[in-house]
Length: 281
Image (cartoon, rainbow, N blue to C red):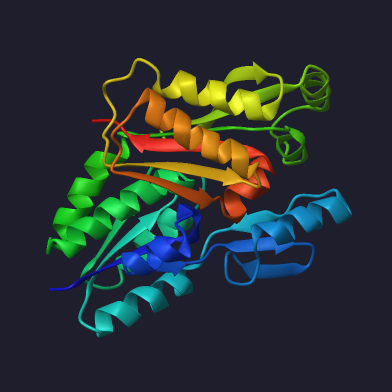
């Protein structure tokens, strides 16, 4: 039986990758003022930057509802597909639980908790899509992707903690101190949750390269199939330097993929955020 791969919109895969691997998307909702819009379809990161600039407030996000998932799953089941659906970590959103409830209402639907976000989730989604192309069943794909989820290494370094402060993730005193000291925090995904890591100091372009060096230097445990560079409005020259640094420190990746983070990462971290995301062996 054919298998359809579906993800919620937090996977941050580019339109080109979605088309290449025939992946369908169920969008989250972004709430800005009194407007609720579909992530990636009706609202973009640029809209979020404009909203924050104009209002000083952050938007909020909400999961697709049960009906959204039922409608999407049923569409593909009616066309004769088995379905494997991928979600942002269940610790970040009720998206996973809503998808599981929808899947319980019909046969032939498997749901994967990626235990990650952004292209950390995207790495798991693409693995599932490749297995689907190889003719694996939905159950086989879920089992393989569940096993892979814990091997994904996802992190980001953040230019300014203004968005983290606005979102209530750090105090006013901490934000003031960080800005005065030009601190750039590392945000890592560990055990399906976001946690603060090392604090870098200095110009963000230099910090980003130091961060990449810290993540890749003296490693021999990284799967060379693919690595993502995912960012929010970073200097293109810096992004290119990151690509060069990856090739210098850990040569031989089959794919180095660059994507722009979507509304979820944007609303958490703001502009000038960059991460490298990959899978351990």
